[in-house]
Length: 440
Image (cartoon, rainbow, N blue to C red; front, top):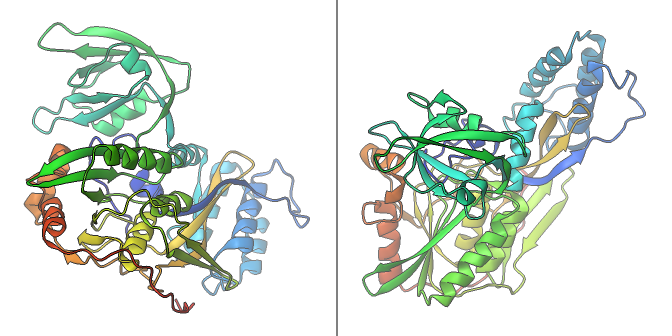
């Protein structure tokens, strides 16, 4: 299964590895591997990392048959090998995990593991600027300096052009390359050469800091007589639920009379964040049901904590995955919102994340999830109530000009507004939950 891609936009620039690593409903993070009495190798040997990885899969992987592999025999074969260094051990782990046939159970080297931790935490080290590439000039433009960040305090402004990073010209530099140079160790300095308003470029020295990454963006849009609270949710990090709560309360104070929640391009994130956000829209009903390899069920339910009962439409597309699909499925099955857009990605698996003793990590699929009415969306996705597929030109326009999202040049948003204007939306009504089959 291919991983979902994301719009190359101001909303997604900071997490450039998200499409490759972050598409998931992550149940827990930073779980240390448990010690094993059966470990028969030195803790400093590369074999120790191999065995730690094997143990985690043996203990938690959702498929108890391990894709019909003899998992005990696999361990013996792994420990018979000699590994000259950690890189050879990493290759062996990745090769073994491929045999499980699950792209979401994966090994992460220390750098990848740190990136995943940054993503799920909703924080990153940097100077606090949101970048976008001008599609015509290829210049790197500051879209925004985050409040109270080093960049904002130094006077960097929206529209500034970054000419060089620590003396390295940004000419012909792509967005990902610039981001990798700007990010770095907290407390370390960096110098950006800025061009502004046709004047001569000048240097600004900054010190990197820990930055909270915004995942929720909101504004009021007047659509005829309808005052729409538009909320774009880019990911499900540890800060997403508090940011969502703030956005809803702010829009309520501004007396909107309908909501559009935009989850297009959202690849997922933390399961708990999706549950917490669902509870802000739902008073009653099941949100999601998970089933582990032993048949253990866990239901996540609404807790009478909805912040609004106003009519609602949710925008999704083929890049809305996992935790996004949990939220969309909950709102759809509980008849709380109309889902508008394209078929979602179709990832119905939950991962736990573990740290290994050398700083590397593992993401392991531990459960299968089902929407409130018992639907398994795996490989199928959530079906919109109102299907609106974009043609190639429309997709290109929105990808290259993210400012068009939620505008009159955004066909899916416009259809959502039409739904809110014209459709007599049902009162939120929790559905009766049928029994869940474990057939996969």
